[in-house]
Structure formats: C-alpha cells, structure tokens
Length: 455
View (cartoon, rainbow, N blue to C red):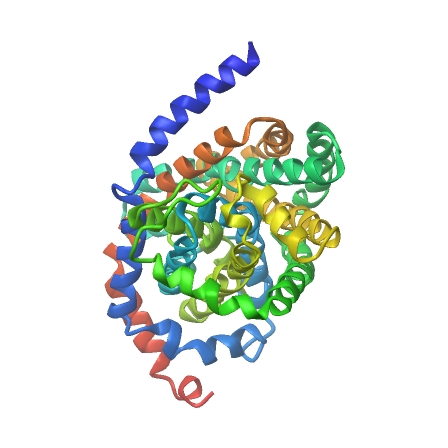
C-alpha cells in the first residue's frame, strides 16, 4: 500500500518536475541571469577575487561589528549547505545522464554563479534586520518585503524555502548517504537514517552560533579528506587526464554516443543536467546562501557579497570537478551505476577498497553539514512566516524528515528536490534583476574608498 502511494507520488513529481525544472526555462534562466550580471558588473569574480580572499582570511574583521558570525563562519555555513551529497551523487547522476560534457556546463554555471551569488548576498546583507530574539535576520524575503514592497513575493519565497529545506537540504542527503553506506557496508537504511537524525538534532537546537562553529570546523576537514583522495586517483592516472578533458570539451557542443550502460546524450541534455546539478550543488541564484551570509559581522554588504563568491569556487569548480574527473578517468561513467554508487565504484577503481571508504566518509560528513545548514535556512523562513513559535516544531519535523528521506526511493527524492529548486529560484532571480541598479551603486561606492583600493 505504502509503496503504491510512493510510486504514484513519484510519477506525479516527475511530471511536475518536467514542467518546472526542465530545459524549457530553468537552466537557461540561471545561466542568463549569471551572464547578465557578469557583464553588467564587468566580471567581478575576476576583478575582485584577490580582495575577496583577503576578506575571508580575516583582514577586515573587527570587533563590535553587527552580526552573529564572522566572515569565515558565514562562508563555512553557506559552503556546508552547498557541499553535500550533490557533490558526490549529484555529479555522478549528471554525468550518467548527460555524459562528460555535463561537467563543462557545471563549470560554466559555477563561474557565472559566482557573480549571481555576489549580487544576491550583497542585497540580502543590505536589507537585513534584527528579529524578536535579537538575532540577525536576512535573506531574499526581506529584500522583497523591505526594498521591493512585495510582501506576497516574500511569503512565496519563504514558503518555497521551507519546502526546499526538506527537498534539497534534508531528504536527498540522508537518501544518498543511506544508499551508499548500505551498498558499501550492508548497514540498513533505516539505521543510518536514525543515526543521522539524532546527530542533526543535537546540533540545530543551538541556532546559527552553534551551526557556524560546527561548520567552520567540519567544512575544511571533510573537504580536505575527499579532495585528497580524488587528487591521488587523478594524479596516479595522470596519463588519462588529457583524454578526459578532451571528452569533456568535445561533447560540450556535440552529442555523446551511447557507450556501455550509458544511454547517450544530446548537447541540450548535457546542458540541462550540468546546470541543474550545479545549481543543486552550489545553489547560486536560489536565495538560500544569502540567509547565512546575512548574519556576517560587517557593515559592508559588498564585502560579504565578495566572500560569498568563494562558495561556487570551492563547491563546484573544485570539489565537483574532483568527483567528475575520477568518474571519467576511471571509465566508470560508461557503466550502469548512477548517483553515489557510481562515485563509489569510480573511487574503488582508483583506490581499491579504500576508495569506497573515502566516499562513505564524504557522504556522511557532506550530508550532515548540508542538513545542518539547511535547517537554519528553513527555520529562518519559518520564523519569517509564523514568528519564533514556529521554530521548535519546524526543527522536530526536519529531524523526522531526515529519517524518512533515508528509506524512500531515490527517484522520488531527486524529483522533489528539483521541483523545490525551481520554486525558490524564480522569485529570487526576479528580485535581484529588479535591483541590479542598487548592486552596482553599492559596488561603486565600496571600491571608491581609499582603504579598499589600496588593500
């Protein structure tokens, strides 16, 4: 009975996903917005890169600044929300469906997404406020309400974010990790889901300050372990690197032929899956990360916007690339496996036995970090909609949903995830495009100051 209900829901979500998240608009809307802002702001991801690095390293940190987290803690929280199972299972799914060329379009999306994230975070920081409990409250919903006077759009975004916290930051994470651990170690999915739910509950009750502290310690460790394993495989197979890049660039503009278990892909299919999985991975344009960045301790919105540009760089251009290259170099992309199982097979092919352990560890750490950050995004939006009283029940439901995500079928989870991405992105992109003039004004003002130009 339950399985029939889930199957029906999966089919319904698949149909809705084809309407909301298909190649008809979503990938090109994200890319188009990134292209617009990249040219409008004259490639800020290149011009201001060095300055952004100095901010992240603490050069401009000062005591007594308004906010709840340092620049590094805010960035870590945002990255922990993006560096998740999408970097392992999502990348593998994109290559399985779109071929090696999907990685090229993930790069394009990430490069353009650095500018999009700069814009959305700058605006969210500019129009942040203080909630009833004395904490900083910010995000696209406050931009829409306080600057655009569009309360209805703010409410729509907040509802979409609450829903998306389950569809993006919650169930896909527990689903991927439970699947990977069950395949690698034979541990039942329900047991993994229970352990994850307990671990998550112990962290999120502390709010942004505890989340920021956990994230600032967890993100560097988990990223280093995973990237080190991937780099070892890539460098050990250095003679295949050139051929792998040839495949990536060759099929970015020409169809990929069917090989082995791979069904073959058109260029449009590669673009669609590359962009969608990159969007799921780094979240540029969705409006989620600005909620974390709005809490940064600074009076300069542009400064935090520059910090936010590092998110897509770390998440997609580095970590997702490592995953994709391992899959392509080892040749596992032509097999029949997909999602995190494909990544595990590729790592095992590169480092027998130990590779699967690295992926399992990555799944655990990535999933926990993403679920923690998205719980914060969701409770900020729940509070925006219903006040502080909504936060405790939201957190309980969030913890329960993490367990549910571990035991339902993968197709249901990913369809749900893609739908919620589209529902968040549309109002957010409309808002930031409408306020493009505000962003360029703030940017010119910030970089006109002598201490900024000379440091």
